[in-house]
Amino acid sequence: MATRKVLLTVVGHVDHGKTSLLDNIRRTAVTAGEAGAITQAIGVSIIPIEIIKKICGSLLDVFKNNLTLPGLLAIDTPGHAAFTSLRKRGGSLADIAILIVDINEGFKPQTIESIEILKTNKVPFVIAANKIDLMAGWQFDSNKSLMANINSMDYTAQGEFEKKMYELVGKVQEHGLESERFDRVNDYTKQVAIIPISAKMNQGIPELLMVLTGLAQKFLEKKLQINDEGNCKGTILEVKEEKGLGKTLDAIIYNGSLKVNDTLIIGDATEPIVVKVRALLEPAELAEMREKKSNFKNVKEVHAATGVKISAPGLDHAIAGMPIRSCSGKDKKEIELIKQEVKDEVGDVINECDDDCLGVVIKADTIGGLEALRNLLEEKNIPISSSLLGDVSKKDLSKLESLKDKDRFTGVLLGFNIKVPAEINELAKAKTLKIINHDIIYKTIEDYEKYVETLKKDIEMEQLSKLVRPCKFFVLKGYTFRQSNPAIVGVEVEIGKIRSGDPVMNKGGEKISRVKSMKDGSDTVSVGQQGRQLAMALEGVTVGRQVREGDFLYTDVPEEDFIKLKAMKSHLSKIEIEVLKEIATIKRDNNPVWGVG
Image 1 (cartoon, one colour):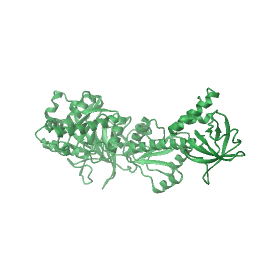
Image 2 (cartoon, one colour; image 1 turned 180 degrees about the vertical axis):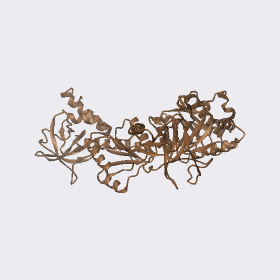
Image 3 (cartoon, one colour; image 1 turned 90 degrees about the vertical axis):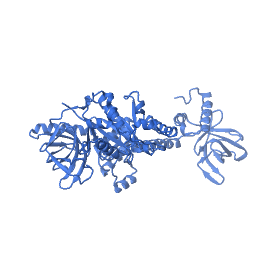
Image 4 (tube, helix red, strand yellow; image 1 turned 45 degrees about the vertical axis):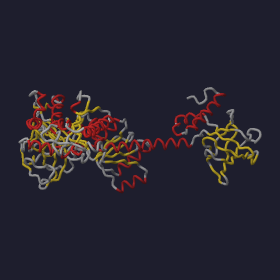
């Protein structure tokens, strides 16, 4: 058994400083006289504990030489890949994360997405409040520590700084988490530490590394115990086309070891891919991995935990985020067992259920993205019928049609970072099928929740249109146009609205008539709106007998409609609700339990 390095990922909104943070940790190491000591493997920067000690200096004295961690393995994969690829069965591959936030801009869409995914995957994290050097009145002295620089600011600048810090604390609280500036944290298990930094000016980097090291030392020690020999376990970070090599995998190996000529079993949406490792490559020291011109060196073997580029024939269909496993390839039974293990792991995320299923269809470009979307939906108790990889197809639309017929609310396709081809989009519109797709997960979920609310409202309004609405109207004096057969009288709609066909009752609760038709001036109308004066034709009554000029009349709301109207009272105006109560009071004079249900 060995203790591996802490797997660290840096996440946050674009342009808030993710890339420059790791670049500056490297630069800080160089300043400390350790040029080249931070090595780069594929997809990760390896930061040994000795370098952390040199950067942090006396800040680590609190550990009294009891640091047992071998260092950090910082993932510097760009963009969404940090989340959508960084997975292993049962959660995130990352042990700890830095959520980087521009202190001047605050929370942005990807900040919110990052914090939600960290919460869902239960990944402990700290917040690096970057770009403090851009704040008004910031004074920077390279000979002073972060706290000394903060404390030496004038009263106005300190006030502005504290305001920005507590805006961040408030934003974090909106997501159900407590946070505080790192030097004020009472309990790291309950509060997220915020470390103010300037990646540009190298301020706060020692404090950030000190907090990360302390958290990892205290809470992650057992998790870091691994076997760095035997068959490897890993995850694909990126699939790339490399000149002279063809398709290659950038992968993280988090357990065991991987050798040239090993058999590699790779997860897939259907059957696992089985290939033979042709070459293992690492970049030359200090080479920038994301540049295609990086000079790679061949190695025979790599041990956990590290990053490596894998070259092998048959990688054309490999997908980022998929699990990889290795074995010698000599034992066919072992290969079959590992294939089943990988298949089960992928099956936890990718599934297509039968025709009886109800729930939304979800799709993403990577298995990690799919898992993140699924986890966030499950947290909100939104049912899922199928979770699949890839762009939207005609087959998806057929599935969607069938689901929509069963349930309009869940007959929806939710996508994360996928493409909807133009012809598919047109077909979906023609069939009135709903597709919601964004490159930010929470936007997809937010839009779906808005869609559900709108649909609920539409359905309620549809139901409401079929009910007899509460209405009180007045028979005008001197405007009897016909006494009977049908009676035609002038009325004024005092409260609510009345439609042709609605039953009418008197103030004693007795049904006396039905509205046959209405005219507003010379126009025939089907709805009489509040405040309008109309000529109304009433069936089966004679003016002077059942109806008199000056009478107040009401719609005769059926008991069943009354119960439904009560449930939908949010769609009624306050005065309509008052009239509804008035109608119920009149009805209950004759039947005390009317409308109780």
